[in-house]
Length: 239
Length: 239
DNA sequence: ACTCGTCTTGCGTGATCCCGCATCTTTTTC
DNA sequence: GAAAAAGATGCGGGATCACGCAAGACGAGT
Image (tube, rainbow over all chains, first blue to last red):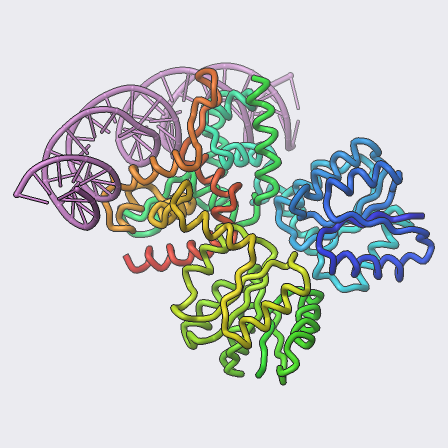
């Protein structure tokens, strides 16, 4: 067995190396990459089927890397080791994991014990391991109780990218009015009104406000938006 | 001499501790806090005049903490140790550092040598030390060459928060038309048009697009927006 | 003092957004 | 299979936004 570590912070990298060595004595070789780009290449070259990877890296983030790696070899097992459990990240991961693939999501704030346990569970037992906090997040995002539903989420992204209602309608192949309906629900779910209590002033631009709120609720974040931006450009070119 | 370390990642914290011990043998005591809240209190209790602090922390970020610390004791020397050199962070720091105070800004990606050197420079020599990359950022933000000027920046924040033109005008005490003029300049500087080349479609909502672009250019980020949000609420209540 | 450039402000227009009302088509539920 | 809930689409109006045009305000330069 061999393991590939993809992590751009050298401290965290060596911490991971120690943890892997301690938790998986059957591991014969450890490879390391300090960004997603190199990680992809090394995964290909070494045919690594076991990867531990950070989500937020500057040159190429974990989600992008994971997507291409899984595209080439869907049975790869990936343990994401991340600082945050933003809904944007959880959604991002959930969208790209292939059916039946084993993967994990543990936070950097987790104890070393938890990390080691996750390492064994996923790489030896092929089980999925998801941190409690992340799990909570996932519930909220999937269960539509008060959470934003998938279609609404797409609209939200489009709005955040700066598209007009009309453009969104064209992109998603629905009528202009439907886009506005979705937006209406978004405003409600995000708790965006305009009167803010008392009187006439202190008004919000609902569309911009919704983006701000979604951002502060970690529904969208930098990495997610940037990914969406490239998809948008592809669509713009194709059209 | 005693030094206070404020950093929420335990690995980085112990790395910092080692670096301080190695670089500053004259340091008699090291205190540690794992978030900005505790950091503030410890700075007050121990009358720490020498602080090394991370900028991005979950419960209370470095800029907020620094602001209250500097408010109570403006001669405190603070070395910010951060992962990023986003324009938003650089602006945030620049806005709160008191006149004549010694401070530093070094990136976590810097070599250990550079960190130690900065520690001595700021805490022994009372010099300001700013990383090369950060410096470049600062030039761009202050020199108005193509950069966004301070007044425009305020408007940008307000727009990102979701305020309407009228509300911005009220908040900043300028006319509605002036707000729109500023916005016009912002659109230009951010490179926001709507036709995107060919035809009628693929239109952008300029206001939302500007926010997206600013966000992707690191002009605004999560922490900055959240700080601005509380300021906004104070204003809303006062009004 | 006069002029020039930059900034502020008002007016007006067309495009866009927000959203209630009403119709028609799914999908869900029993 | 019918009733009920949820979604899609059109119409229309009031509010907001984007922005050209133009008139006053202010400091800088020769």
